Image (cartoon, helix red, strand yellow):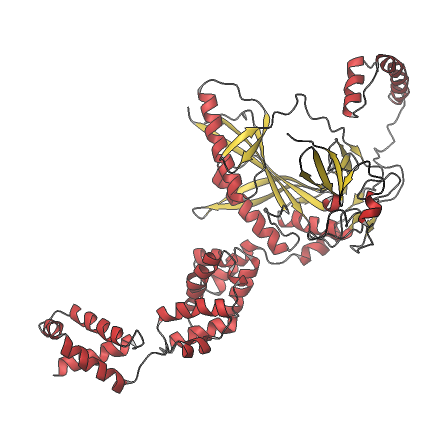
Length: 477
Length: 95
């Protein structure tokens, strides 16, 4: 049977405000357990939470960046359940009047845009952290009360790859907004996935499973791919799908049923009487809209236009905000006319250095000026492109300047014709057969001879000049 | 509105309250009365009353993103029935 996969994602994002959502305890992940806590985030009776203005502004910016409609009236509700990481026995969240609805973002496949709907983006708070030991669970409430937003997508994603692309684009936009670390490994971005299969062509959704416990975008994709296979096999066998939550086991590469007790979740949401409603007026929205930075898609279009970049090149450069800033600065101060040469360095040698070190290009230990100084040596013919790549790597490792390293390693190309002629003469004497070949019309032999000269000069001879000298020498005689 | 014992048991379970048969009986009577009061609302004419989620006429109460002094862990853990180092400790909740 042929099935269509239907996926919806729920992304929880920690906002990087200085203090928590409802109290002034600072947010700092390095602190000792239970040192960033107070009567409010510990849920002591009689305390009053008051929402963080900065968190509200950040959340509205995210909602605007995802083209959501900000709701005029919004309020907080209590989501009631018991778990040791939840000090109040309810989580402050939003139920029927979320901050925003009806947004979208685009993903691209083969340069074709596909619009993915965003159902809602709402405000909530994080729970504490649990550490499980023999016979006991330990609770650290430093994380309890950190402002979160939840971004819920429509079931518009039709493959694990589309889910991956959605997450990548979502993260990129949020990084540009500078409102969250977006680090899945650190838990500042978390993602749950709903997935179901339906007969190809059918409009009715199948029974879904909810997947949790993925700690990377690749993990999300892998868990979804596994689930596609599992559900297809089950449906082919005529088995009954159960609506359930399954945990991704990254090591074994499988999803496992959480086997929770039966009965629908009953959170008994009700408006939190400790918190007032919010009226968000058009003024406030427009003020925040003006503060939105240039977003990845706009930057992409601008890079393509202003620097005549291909979509492929531009996409690499704008994928991270910091890389885009670094690259644009390089392109701006690069003195050459053909900016494409600068771009080639960025997406070529520099990107491969970054990839092999598993960092972004902007995180490499090299300044724009130093990079351009290195490229200058190549363009003036003073060092070969190949040695330049080696120098680049050493610059990043040592922090030394291009000039220092080139002199230290004696890499300056020999362009001095007198010195080169001496080497050429000895190469001619040692390779009479190739010389004859060349003279009898086998032009390829010249390349071999140039190679021999390069070898004798330990790669320092300027190959262009060697070629000219050699061919003149061999045709004149 | 009538309430049956099954619903009372369900609500008690959600609140993690273990009810004895006698308590269940007593609560049945009490909850029945309470729900009776609430039922009266449905007999009122509320056409001109706007829905409210809050009883006070205030909105948009926000605080600046400014740190305050947190509790020391000693103070935070002072009343904890069980602790280990700087942590609150509870019976293990996963297998």
